[in-house]
Structure formats: structure tokens, C-alpha cells
Image (cartoon, rainbow over all chains, first blue to last red; front, side, top):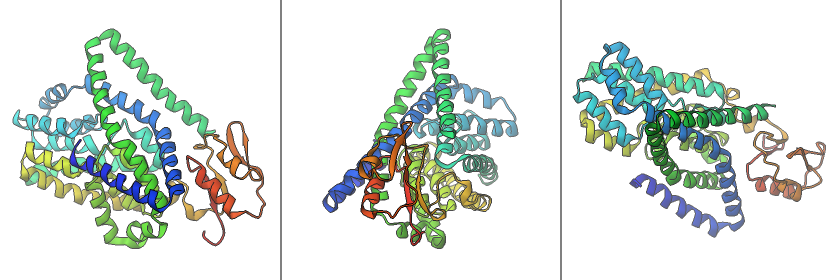
Length: 160
Length: 243
């Protein structure tokens, strides 16, 4: 558990104690509400997690790298961004992977576009996002994030 | 109707995943094992953060008044709201879907679409633990340049989003637009707690709660209790003064 996750636990525990001291009934209601929320999201989250696990097993980081390496910069950038959208790689895998990519001769532009869409755009989390915010919000947010991921990537290429 | 459709869609996704797993295990058992192994990691990641996120969201929902959220993240918060949204997203923990319940709650309490987009995006890409990791593997210069560019991009596209999207586009019931009593049929689980609290108004039909009596002089105490007891927050009540 990283320190930030731990901090959220500590903070929430403190909040819970404060809440209990202030109003026992309201706290009980809140906990009940939390359970309700969890129940509502659990099945969606689980299907998403199984989907991510599968995608990562099929599109291994190595195969992604091998594919991106062979393309020209523009195609590599856009396809890297696309690959980034379908997978949701944890940061501790993503950064070393991008490090290897760059050491292996892949340009900075595709690497950055991959990194950005990796975390910001999630095809697998789209059903969940639609459930929370509605279709229009989800499409616009993911679409813009994708577009800007490519802009960020090319700007990085110019600056560095 | 949409409820049934959503259920079907969800199960379709699940069915599809189960089928794919079966296929993979038959054709390439090694990939299947790897997939299960990956999934195990993500389940652990989820269990580390989601329970606490739900409790935190419910507690904030209970204790932070609407006025406070509106002041810090709402229409009049301006720059303060933007900075605060970035800060909240950056110190967050967990994958992006952990931000969904929190953002929905904040939006219901009056946060702007723009601030929600900033919070979601910074939750996804500029988390501090991630930045440390990035610096370690890709160098400080890379990290800083990417960070600055990402913040600029988020500022721009959150603004664009707020220009394109109106509040009614978000399929979250906005508290301001409604007067009266309403039960969200999509979230109601038919637990009948509301009927126990206020049987003169609420009834159960087809495993969902419904409103038996629309024209009534509400017993505010009882109604409030029924609303608070609903585990999924499906009941909404707005009287004319507060709307």
C-alpha cells in the first residue's frame, strides 16, 4: 500500500470516529449508504477488472513495444495512443515499460501518447463512467483526453 | 425500461467476458493463467481502495453541506475551484473509477462540470505517487515537462467540456431543477425501508418502491427519515422553498 492509499484510510477512519462521536445515527446511515454504493458498483467493477486482466495477458507490454517500434512516428503515436486507451496498466509497470521503450529506440512522442491515454482514457471503464455521468459526458471527456494526449505527446517531442 | 436495458447490457458484458475467458483457457491456457494472475493484482488494488472510498464519499455526503461545496467547487469558486480540483486529484489514491462516486456526489452538491473534469483527469494522470515513479524511470526533466503540459491540457479541455456540456446532459438528477417527490427507479433495490418509515406515501410494486400519494401534506420528520434510510439514495424530495 502506498502512502497515499494509507493516508486515505487514516483520514477516513478519523472522519468515521468524528462522525460517530457527533451523531451515531447519521453515521449508521452513512455506512449503510456506502454499502449501497458498493453493491451498485461491484459487479461492474469486477467485470472491468477481469477484462483488464485478460487484455493485459493478450497484449503484453512486450508485444506492444515490438509493434510500436516498427512504425513511423505518426502512426506509432496514434497507435500507441489507441493501445493506451484499451489497457489500464498500473503505474509501476507503465513507467519502467516506457523507459525500456525509449532506451530501445522508440521515440519520445509515441511513448508519451501511450503513457497519457493509458491512464486518462479507459475503454474498459467506459460502461462504468456512462453509468455515473451519462453517455454524452463520457464521450466528450474521453474524446478530448485522447485528442489532447496526442497534442501533449507532440509538444513533448518539440520541447525535449 | 432503461433499467431493464442497462441490466441486459451489463450482463452482456459479463457474458462476453466469461465466454472469452473460456475460449482463451481452451486455446491458450498459458495466456489464461496470466490473465487470472493480472486480474488478481487488480482485485487487490481495488480492495485496497474502494471500500474506504465508498465510506469517505458517504461521510462527506452526510457532513459537508451543499453551500460549502458550492463555495469551493461551484459556479462562484472560479480559480480557487480549479486549483482545489487539481489538488484533490493529485493527492488521490486508486484507479480512475475510484473517482466516479466522489465526483457524482460533489456534482450533486453543486460542483461545476469543469471542476469535475479537472478532478477526474488529474486523478487519472497527475497523481503524486505516479510522478515519483515517473521521475525514477524517465528522469526529472521528462516528468516536469509532461506534468506542465498535462496541467495546461486539462485546463483547456475542461473548459471546452464545460462549454459543450449543459447540466441537463449529465444524467445525474440535478437538485435544482426539481420540485416534489421522486424515486429513482434505476437505483431502487426494493428494500422497502421507505415503506416501513412512511407507509402512507410509499408502497412496493414489482419489487420497486413507488409513490402512492402525490398530493399530501408531508410529515417532514417521517419523510426525512425515509429519505435518509434509503440505502441507495433513490428518494429525492424538494420543497418549493429550498428549490
